[in-house]
Image 1 (cartoon, rainbow, N blue to C red):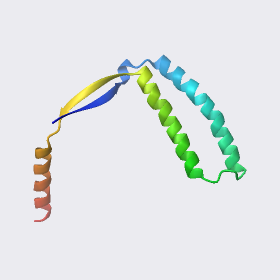
Image 2 (spheres, helix red, strand yellow):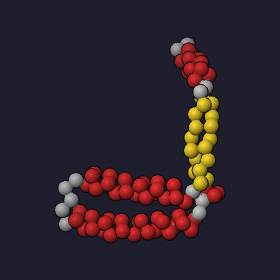
Image 3 (cartoon, rainbow, N blue to C red):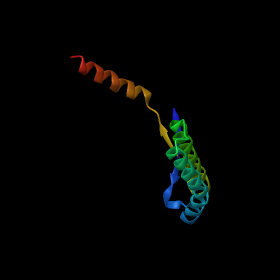
Image 4 (cartoon, one colour):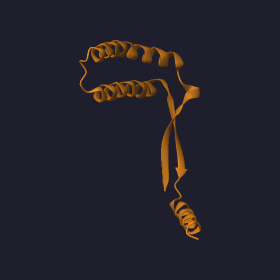
Length: 98
């Protein structure tokens, strides 16, 4: 079975676009985080977990969309050798039970 995995090409990245894009998208997020910090300090945030999760998702979303804009990708193919892995696993299990 042949599997493929997409990998980012850092050596082919457009770093100027990367910094511009992330700066443009993180700047509004900074104001949101400042407001969230103030609300938390004032006791107005009831569910901190949701706030952290939402912020994390926003950051990952910006970085993920930037990757699709600024970086070229390559596809790496590799053969999955399940039988070899199973044989090795069986051997290791047998050695542990001796």
